[in-house]
Image (tube, rainbow, N blue to C red; front, side, top):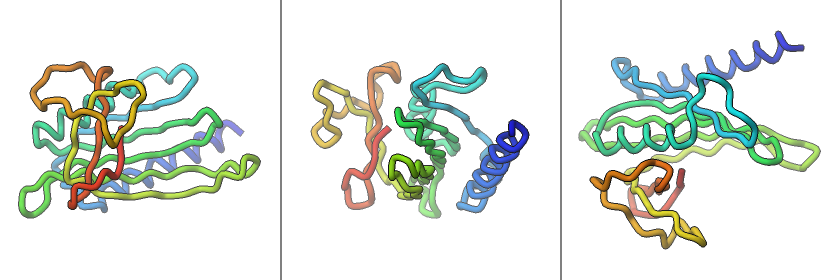
Length: 165
């Protein structure tokens, strides 16, 4: 049972690595971070949500390539494997390519799904209560806030909000 779980996790990891390398990521860009978000204690060696947010912002703001591999679990136990790839296109424009794969939970009528999008703008926003990604105030790019004090908001090529972290 444990061996099968380890084998399944290894297969998912290899598939994610293969996808990242096939997804246009430059072979010379090897800067990666592996993080886990859950409502239980994180595994040793796994980065936190703040670490992941900081990684994404530092790479975006510094115009550096990188890949974040994120495993998250909802309160219901639904697993989401995400890959956030930061790279520049042929015109030297920074892009954030995001792929989210959610597992199914048949007992809760939650089906598996895959969502992908490309962000052309990444903004830091201040999470005020109540938090609304649409109206959240943008934080200056050079403001030295710790990652626990901001969220990231993603916009598409037309400026429409398409995601957050």
